[in-house]
Amino acid sequence: MPVLLSAASRVEVRSMTKLAVPVVLAEIGWFAMSLVDTVMVGPLGPAAIGAVGTGSILFMTLMVFGFGTLLALDTFVSQSFGAGRIDECHRWLFAGLQLAVLLSVALMGASAAGLAMLPRVGFHPDLLGELIAYTRPLMWSAPPLLAYVVFRRYLQAMNIVRPVMLALVAANLMNLIGNWVLIYGNLGMPALGVVGSAYATVASRVVLALSLFGIIVYSERGNSSGLHDVPFVWQGDRVRRLFQLGWPAALQITLEVGVFAAASALAARIGPLASAANQVVLNIAGFIFMIPYGLGSAAAVRVGQAIGRRDAAGVRRAGWAALGLASVVMSHAAVLFVTVPAALIGVYSTDATVIEVGIVLLFICSVFQLFDGLQTVATGALRGLGDTRTPMMLNLVGHWAIGLPIGYVLCFNRGWGVAGLWAGLSVGLILIGGSLLMVWHVKSRATVFVEEWR
Image (cartoon, rainbow, N blue to C red; front, side, top):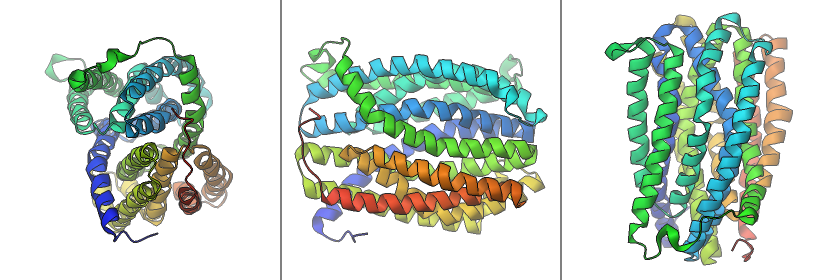
C-alpha cells in the first residue's frame, strides 16, 4: 500500500476524512437501530436476544439486495456532480425512487414468502415463536428503508452528509424510546415484548425516510432551478441502467450479509445460548464494521467525483486514502477484541455461557478485522470506478464456496460448535480482502475515462 506522504495525498486524506466521518457516524447510527433492539430485549432472556438478532439479519439479508441495487446511485450521481451536471443528479434521484418502488413490491413479497417458510427451517422451538412474532411486523419497514437509501445516496454523492447523520440520531432516539415504551409497557402502553421492538423500529424508519426527504427539499432551496428543473416522469432507460450496474453490487452485499445470516441460522440450530453468543458478537463486529463500510461509501463518492473531473491521479489518491484509514481503524479494533472481550459482551448479556463462548468468537473476529476493512473499502472504491461485478464474484467464491463450507465442517463434523462457523468465515474474508486489494491496485492504475455514464 502506498505511503500517503505527498502534499496532494495529505489533502486527499483531509478531504476523505471530512466526508467519511459524518458518513461513518451515519452508518453507525443506522446499525444502532438493530443494536438497540437487541440490547433492549436482553432482559427477556437468550431466546429473545436470539430471535431479534436472527430476525433482523434474516430480514436485512433480503433488504440488502435492494440497498445494493440502489448503490449504483453512488456512481451516477457522484460522477454527474463531479462534472457539474446538477440536472443529471436530479434525474438520477427520480430514477432511483422509481426503482425503489419496484424493489419494494418484490422484496415485501419475498419477505412474506420467507416468513411462511420459517417453521420448516428447523429453528430451535424456543426461538421460533419469538422469531416469527418479531419478523412479521418488521417487513413493513421495507418501503421507507429503500426510500431512505435513495435519499441518502443522492445527498452523500453531492457532499451533503452532516444532516443525514443528524436525522439518524433523531430516528435512533425515537427507536430507543419506542422500545422502552412498547417492549415493557411503560407510559400506560401494553407490554408487547419482541413485537413492540419491531413496531418501534418500523416507526423510526418511516420518520427517517421523511426526514431525509425534508433535507433534500431544504438543501435545494438555494438552487435557481431546484428539483423542478427536470420532470418527474417514468425514466425506463435510467432505471434499467441503475439496475444493470446495481444488481452485482446488490448480489455482492447479499452474499456477504447472507453468509452471516446462514451462520446465524446454523447457530440457532445448536441452541439458544449458542445463538445468543453468535448474535452478540455479530452485533459487536457489525458495529465496528460500519466504520470501513462508511469509508467505502466515501471512497465511492470521492473516486466517482474524480472520474467526473477526469482526474486519474485523484482516483488513486481517493481509494488509497480510504484504504489507509480503514487499515488503522481495523487494526485497533482487533486489539480491542483481544484485550477487553468480556466487557464488550457484558453490555448485552450477563449469562456466563454466553460470555464464555463470545470471548472465543471475538478472538476469531480479531484475526480477520484488517482484511474485512480492506475488502469493504476496496469494494466501495471499485464501485466509484463503475466495477461492481468483481467484488460480487470474489464474495461468491470466498464466502460460499470456501468460507461457509469450512465453517460447517468445523462446526458440525469436527465439534467446534459456533466457533467453527466463525473460523470458516474468517478464512473467506481473508481471501476476499487480499484479492480485492490487488484488483483495486491494478484497475485504478488503468483508469479510462468514458462518457457512457452521462
